[in-house]
Image (tube, rainbow, N blue to C red; front, top):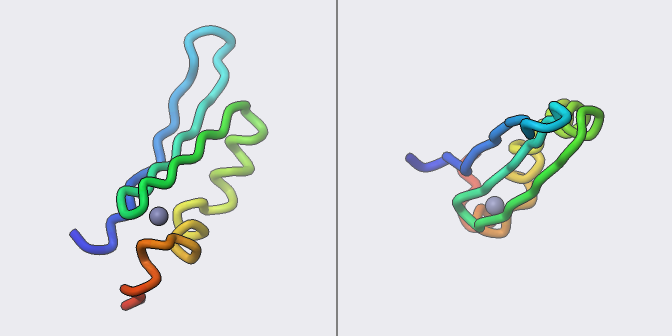
Length: 65
Ligand SMILES: [Zn+2]
């Protein structure tokens, strides 16, 4: 179970087919939401989970990786 930092969920609003990406870190409860096709694509391309893992305050004391 260690190492699981929450998740990334992609969905679409019914109206306008606008994609919405939600990133949730269960370690520090950081939440970030990105809305819009271009922003979501950029967000996913930037590997937000890995990025957050490097910054996550809850992971500072447990950096086994
Ligand atoms: Zn975090």
